[in-house]
Image 1 (cartoon, rainbow, N blue to C red):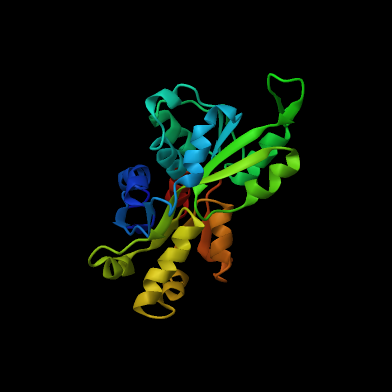
Image 2 (cartoon, rainbow, N blue to C red):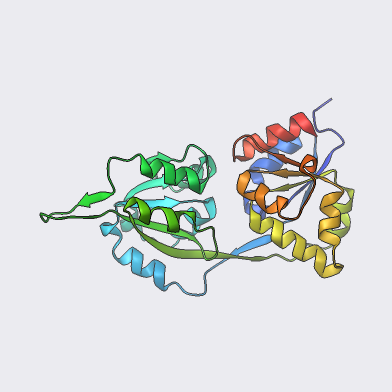
Length: 264
């Protein structure tokens, strides 16, 4: 018997991002309910990213903290600009894989697969100053294409290390509309999976729009799986019992699948 035979699992990622976990979980016998809680849309203004791209050659590093940021950023680039990119740092394997799909390699990956890990990695680099052709040394310029609303760990910490950080929104997340019958189907599930704090918030908003308090009540009656500490912190904010929440050892889809195979 396969490890997840007769288990029904709700995936809350966007449909585009659910492919890997869906394939792996179904191979383990699970029945899946795709319930995307967010959709990716352009930011209200493109000004910041166009200004950054216009002087891309002046940046020493590009930082990516999600596959969404990679995909949206490269949508702005011409083929010519792709040939002359700064060094690239990524937050984890999924983000690195998104780069590989674009035909681009990264130079640095955070060991802890979260923004704090990138800060730690940059703190160990030889220096935060990048010399130009003049005699004086200038702060190393770093470009962070990201979601319009995101954690500000890098914004707060990298300048303290001497880096000059430019933040350029390349997408924003919005609440998705459930597909027909999805609100009925998820009642059959044994477990639900979250891979970001925004997915948690939008899931609650979707269910609460049907009936106040329904979202939290639903989570309290299910096993809840989290991809990492940032998502887990959002779940703990809801005062769920610690025993209900299981967190992947590493912030990757593979680690999350392995956890469900062992514990569900």
